[in-house]
Length: 191
Image (cartoon, rainbow, N blue to C red):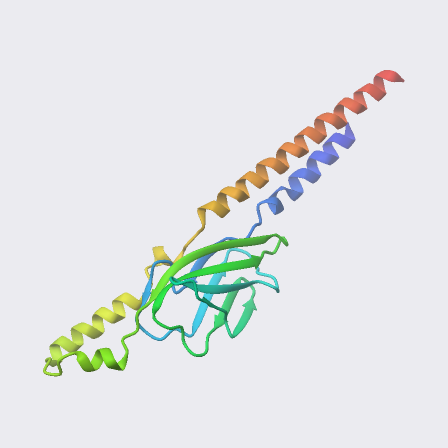
């Protein structure tokens, strides 16, 4: 009986580590955002520490891949820098990170870059009033700010897979306990 309690205590001790998979909780730019300023850095924040070897790439709408010039990992933040800045397009960030528990996690999210070029600015009429310029600045500031709800992005498929992994591990442990109990009872009856 002591063995059973010991096994159960160990299972309860290690149960929280089963659900320690990394999940994207924040990104800059945020999911669905349209960046109207030059973008030379992308940051992904996860709920757990991210290990070395984690990386991401940008895939444009036409399939062109952009790899960060440099990738830095600091605790739970994965940051990539781009030089020259990311050109105008719709992008999918495809990340492949190694979480604190050693499990690889893949996911993606989308955003757009729409920086006005000098050619576009030259086409606009120059007889606008100062009031109109102020409105334009306010609009661009609002669109480049990230909404807190957008910033905390999670990939539901990752959460679901994490739940399934936890359920499978628990089921295997329960089956192992049943087998151990059955074997120990047979041995005790056989004596």
